[in-house]
Image (cartoon, rainbow, N blue to C red):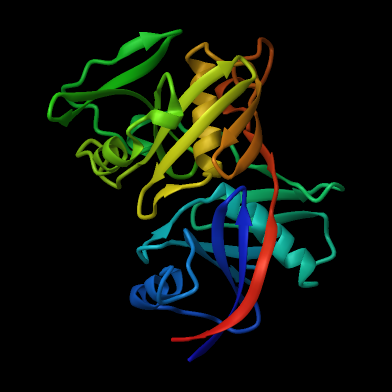
Length: 291
């Protein structure tokens, strides 16, 4: 089978985008791993499949697969590439697009400067919905928000804030993210038994109340150059913990993202306020692969 694809990236988080709007597409986990393989395939962090409208009032469907072939719920950087793809390919002439993922309805907006703003929805803090198993654990409160201790073995402990942005995240603060042991600690957090569906492990360095640096070890993909939902989760956690203001510039290794959340602003919408992410999306090349 020959498969047409478009290679894209959002702040260095790279994707293979497949158009299934005209014909249904069903790839096996083995085929998805082949596409994502950086030596024997195209190479990417995630494979994005664009589908036709699943319901009235929704413009497109959207499925996301990690490099290991597993399907996931959400991908912020991928959603920005999604918008650029459907606009550039003439699949829509709208500037604001409603997209259905496996567990959420997103509203995406193409800006005049080419960047894309995504309404990422409200963060989820209920432990059973993340999901996170807190049985027997005692959190440390900071600014009224929980930091949960994770025993990682070999004397390693991480205090993490846990929440979901459509997918689960565990965020820990570090002094110097460039020298943080992401490759060692990341896999231990990702597979920790308290996260029954695994978790994305974020490493957050606070530069000021409006600027941070971030690295994320993503479940099923390893460390990526940027993680949109990870940036949202890290900023929301930082705001709840009292470290950050409502608008934050996030410096990932592959580029910058602007995250806005007013959940702690007096008189605002409260913890149910939506998170907004703005960042770049670029096409790299197009091609065809035989599977």
